[in-house]
Amino acid sequence: MDALLEVRDLSKIFHPGGGRRIRAVNGVSLGVGRNSVLGVVGESGCGKSTLGRLMMRLITPTEGQVFFRGQEISALGRRALLPFRRAMQMVFQNPFASFNPRMRVLDALMEVCRYYGMTGGEGLKRIEGLFEDTGLSRELLGRWPRELSGGQSQRLAITRALLSDPALIVADEPLSALDVSVQAQLLNLLEDLRETRGTAMVFISHDMTAVEYLSDTVAVMYLGSVMELAGAEELFGGTVHPYTRTLMEAVPRLEAGLRNQERRPPSVKEAEKRDREAAMSGSGPSACPFAPRCREAVPRCRVEAPSPREVSPGHFASCHLA
Ligand SMILES: Nc1ncnc2c1ncn2[C@@H]1O[C@H](COP(=O)(O)OP(=O)(O)O)[C@@H](O)[C@H]1O
Ligand SMILES: [Mg+2]
Image (cartoon, rainbow, N blue to C red; front, side, top):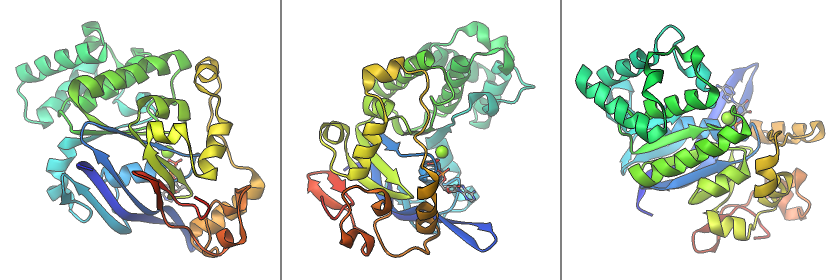
């Protein structure tokens, strides 16, 4: 793949205190192609946000490497990262929290334009052009953030991310805080932006339906590891990993999904929590992390962690049975 962004054997271990270790991301290798969308899907707590922050180099990996346009950025300091900051932008779940409540919309956006070295005139022109692309009315420029709806706020967050004309946007659950009807509109907007502007995207979501709609390639994560990685059509046409099947069964299919008001991440039951914690702390036995929940597990799964196998061209599954 002609990768815009690539990560190799990437791991992040957190030390939250009390001698605990959380292996939030565990040996992940994947790439994001130019002008393409990588969907990252998995249950809450599986390491999606940590992976996104590692890709953006908002946090430093414990092990492994991050490459942007072929250049390694894993160990760069603040100053050396500046040119990359411009080329990679992030959009978060809660649009309300991402704007200063004491700044009008225009001032908030102009501040970003100035940061990127634009004059007032250039900034305004850029903002107005982007408002057309993101479907926002010029009237909103004089408003306060609290006067915006959820959908408008998220469009504004996307606009702000586009001010620097990034090559890549990492969107971390960008639809999860919005009403279902608004989710569908924003999903269309992201699809349009990718088509008209060619912006590559990492689309992080627990929502299989949205991931299927938007992504070219999909990575399915469980307990910090990528369980399955494939082209979206290939993956949704025939998943190989038992975990991916579990996820798909847990989520209503497209038509039902769009009508379903309540779309929360499937949560893990208490009994399974212990296994998760053991696996995440790295103190558990060397095993497939999904083995305790897997209906198809064989004895080997409990003693040997599977490495990714290419089951068909470009389709990888970390499963002994694949
Ligand atoms: N800064 C942090 N310090 C300690 N633990 C963290 C930190 N960030 C995330 N974690 C833990 O890492 C794991 C993965 O979290 P996260 O990447 O947020 O998952 P997701 O986005 O898939 O819900 C979770 O167990 C979470 O509690
Ligand atoms: Mg998250």
